[in-house]
Length: 386
Image (cartoon, rainbow, N blue to C red):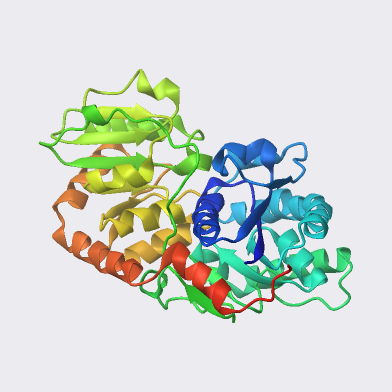
């Protein structure tokens, strides 16, 4: 059996698939450890997990919860205010974890370059975990060149005399939690050895309670969720949705701050967190910020989507949904109640959207998720320490 170290950023959408993979590997008898920002994400990791705590610098939590920018500007902000400082601060702690745990395999989230550098320096077999397909698409030559410059500088700073072009892409393989059918062929990809495994979304820690008895069976139901990071940034959006959908023969489950619950119409259930995987099979559609996990989880249930991207990779993921014919677009920042109502009605009425969502669900079902990742690791016949 192998000793396997996961290196993850303090972001729920990146941790959740890793937790599913870790559970599968543990079930097969492998020994698991984590390098993670315990102070920020402890509740998302297994209760009995062996964890090597990574430092939380001043301002890291603020950057995650309340980023001040959106759109294309958010990519530059992500690198300069989040990614680069996190690599610098976490690399010594990750290397200390490697020295103590002595892993045979490392699974490094693509946003945790410190894991990739530590594995490379120690000569350990490692795989990249790509939790969003936007991370390997080449959408802009100018942007790609700028990002490569940032990565080269980080490698030199860490003491690598010969930097590689994409140090966050493992030469052993890149695990993609999506399917070829969703990613499409519109944009070229960074050259790498890709393993498309589909979503891995089981065994999450800290699941939320939910008033299941309040769900109605006589009307369509939609879930509105902007994800963990974006949930608190714009109360206007939630209020527009309430104005648009109140009084309709429709039930809305909306993930929003507590302050919104007091304002909710009778046909709304408002919660700060929901057990999303268990809830989705009860829904007829999803309105989302186009976070990769939410999109794939909804499509796994053959649910059509309204995508309202805000920042980072979300516009890329939203475009994949639209190009696949499985969703509709909504402007997050400027949508009116009238447009929101019309878009929701179209989502529920357009049978073609549901057909394409079912096609994507089938593409996921044909893949193996967490079990496929475990197979990839085991089939490498890694030499394990006694």
